[in-house]
Length: 418
Image (tube, rainbow, N blue to C red):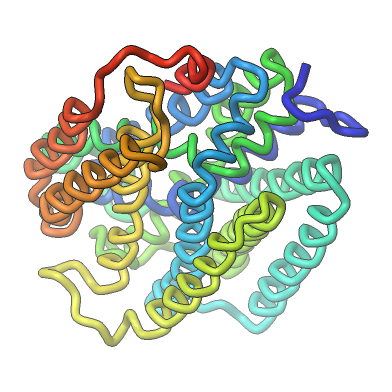
């Protein structure tokens, strides 16, 4: 039996589409490009494999009826913060992406023509209006909306493959680079982040609460093993375009104006979907703190996106990419550290930041992330990935300082989330 009954049940396959599309963020649509540039094909695999497996695993681990609902109730503030940061990240990314596109203006046929601006405007407006109406009408309309969004992106993928657009730069995007050995230090961080962040995602909990245990396994497996996988394959296909804009070597890509517009339609529609569903889940869960955080962080993200071109970079890395990577630190360090330290129950059965045990966890979380943050900066921003090893070790080992008493029977079901 599903955790929460619905008047018109949605098929697990549609929930899988909802999950796959809601997880197609500015991370899945762009981080693989940075990893391909820096580490070659191994970088792409280090992103894709833990992402698919880690997100899909949530449908298998939250087996107990009502467990997802209890987690949302107990960790409402953390989940609201997760959605608020995610929305702000997408607002920043859109503005930064547009600045990268402007940087392609010297490439043949890369400037967006007037008709392209019109297409992008209509796509964004249409997606926003349609999805806003869908989320207000219930689960089935938003699930069907996710199907339409996914089909738009699949259409872009087919068009690019059939027409050979865009042409990869240099020797292509599938070669191993000289820095591929450094990936050994980054891969565990990818695993840490992608394995634990899903448990703070309100859209994931929404899907889990509306499916039976069997339906959840179907939805999460198809959602990430099929639907989301197709989206990150699309990212690899258009990598050549942005590798040039990011200084990935080779000449400017040969890309037709329609292909550039098609890629941007894919990005824009997916961004709109993600922002709307996260904003809807914040409102649906009555998370006033999350709504307020969204406004504040969103305003900050817009300012950063507008002025990132005037800010100083770090070494050879421009400020736009530095800010993008700083946002990524939330998903590589802050949020997974919260799940690891505060959400997964300790042996006394306690989960969360409430009570004396919770305050101790809060201090441990603050200490571990504060000490690890400079090391993550060295690994993510300064390009010295070796520093990621001690940074991650500090977070992982900090759990050993938490209470280790006998588990309380009343919280036995919550421990299944571990």
